[in-house]
Image 1 (cartoon, helix red, strand yellow):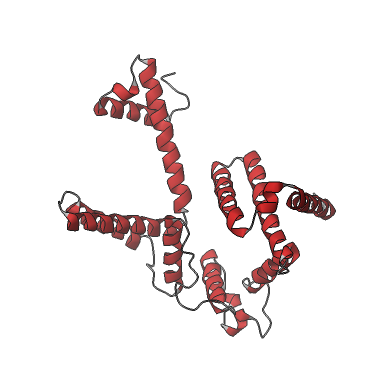
Image 2 (cartoon, rainbow, N blue to C red):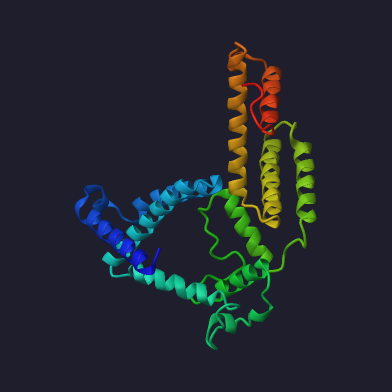
Length: 283
């Protein structure tokens, strides 16, 4: 697609967005607080499409997110606080500023002020460390290791963000073995309180389960795995196996809900084994 075709497509979307804002009763009523939940929902649907590697769905969900960005930018424009062009230009300047290894900074740029060595950047990890260092030094940013970590992030992403900020300060394991050992240690501690009774034991279990999850997220971070997407994929695999196991029960004339736990587990094991076969041997 040529640049002119992209411009024309975006202009058509701009015209449509403005017309909806003027003429649609629902769109006229919206503000940032009412529209952002839809934005978050669309972002999750986009993440799901990307995780499934469904290009058709990805194309559709990218469009939905693009519309959300356009609509929110229009709300800024109505208040005289900015517009889509300002959003795009601000993002462009920010990306240039945070990539000094590609765009050499001027003497008054944040990257230069922080003495970021652009010439030493050769890995993705170094790029991320520079990014965080530059971001923390930008004007108007909150100060502190964990400044501006969004509190409303999903818990797994919040944990990863906190860990990444700590790592930027130098507080990090050198490799993945340390985080893996932390998972083992936390599981041992959870096992010690798992069967205990009383309110203190319940509080301890709550604490230790959180530590196990936090340690697992740290392993994912070191392995460059998105914990949110990985957990979603695991949930989908589990759901598929249970549905397959229930279908196997039905084929043999049994109701899945009436089977004993051992019988269900045996069918689940068969369903899991069939995942690794070129075809469904039980079909």
